[in-house]
Length: 416
Image (cartoon, rainbow, N blue to C red; front, side, top):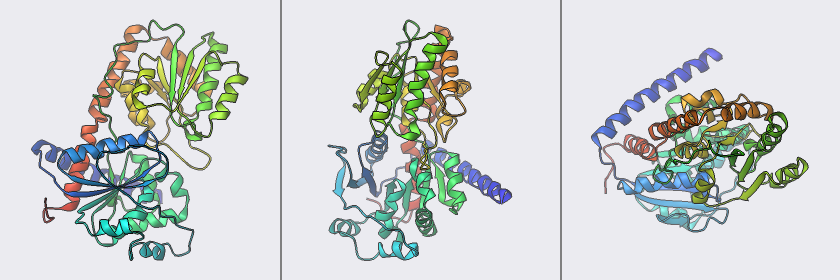
């Protein structure tokens, strides 16, 4: 079994190499790709969604006609300036016949909004998140090129459900392309029976203009200041960060300050932990704040702390956007060898990446960082910025999706 899996992984890597060459040719020639696209979203207000929308808007600026079909779950406000169609939520139950369930979604449209969209000349459907397969099903069945981008939970927790594995297979067997963020996500899909040729890897990227490198350094900061940014959920392990701040004081006599940015179901747990450890004067909880304010909190910090881990329900990270944003600002990042986290970190900083989400390991990494000179810290900031510029630039993300669209739609497709 291991030999077969290794062969499939190598096959997937070869396909990725060919794709990279193809993308570079497309990018150099700047081939125009203009198509009618339907992007499907599940908007619930998470910060990561802003990045999905960023590159979608970049694709619209390249000439694509983009319609956003969205299922609004939370209060996201005015979330997009593109053409929008609110589509009703589709809920599915467990069943012994997943194929019949999916085929049932391809017949009579589930709503007037879906019916109207089916009447448009859509050339490609792009679903953001694995569950968008449900809304994309009518187009998949009609042979319209379909892309499903996976971002984390949908390549981890969702795959713990045999029903969703079968739904993914149903889509793949009908030509759907799954886009993942890193190799381990591709391996997870292959292990679930998705053919390597149905999988592509395209990294997310940040708008470097919105995240300019800061000249502020932490060398004059006494005490040092660390930042945690993320939803307060098990896979982000915020309680490990709080414990690390307490250990840093106990073991090294360093009364570091901690800014916690984000909200979620663990908020009360974290607040109780802060009080129990006597850290109320060292830890500031900001709650959920706008992206521009996140940048303000990050600037000049000693480091971003993100000790991600696999949650009890199987939920895992994809490639956390905040690791890209912090490095773009020149802020070092201390994280774990979890999912794609380490891939986002500049190679010169990976010696600070810890094996698992525990406070002891995190404190060791934090103390090592604090021992670095001001010059070394500036060099870290520069290397982090350069890494994001080369590997996680939103323009690169848009270019790779542009090339994928061109490949899937093909030259025979009608153009605007």
